Length: 317
Image (cartoon, rainbow, N blue to C red; front, top):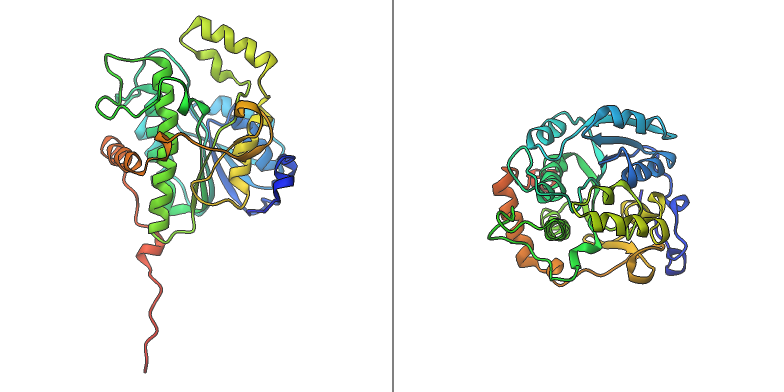
């Protein structure tokens, strides 16, 4: 259930302001640690039933045992489209909230099971396929976790001519591309939902600098060292880092909204609406990326109930 807060309240917003989530069901990807488990815990405490969608069910079960509320664990490997299809095909009933949280960051060059560059394949294509496959069940919103890295120095862009960055791979460029893709996906998804007459909304969020295990897998020893220092002295903890996602998931915001921390450089602070780069606001690139993503995954935007069952016209007798 979405709730409204004034601008003054926004600066003080925290997990206790989520509102009553009883009767709602949420799926959180990458939910066994970091931002994911903090998101699960906050939603479950507010009364939602939360599905931890995780690659390793054993780790997921261990994480679920730390949560006070109604949760369950289901296997989902975003780097394997067969796993994504299996997860979606097994879903029954309505789904109020999908949080596309899982991600990998600045890792050495690797490929998904389907042959995509791992960061683009996991962070974007896996979530693209999952979202479209679950859309017929969704009743409220999709929140996709992006990053300030979408506007890092070097002018991040979508390498349409070489999405896998074959022969020109850079861990940072690949991560920035995937996070830019998250925002373009949100933009085009909201456009399609609106055109379909759907009440479902697509939003995005970023955590600022949050201390999680994500930074520890960086391909660069120097970056890992610097991030470890930053995690200790600059970063928010995972609970604070999850607040923008929770705000986007529960507050009454327009579709395509982007939420992040309100502090200096958007690195920490209370959740608020934030800006995105020009590249992340380009509807032409968003449409082009959507078409490429459909071709790569074989998953398309579904016919939704509002399209299948238009409102009957009155008939005079």
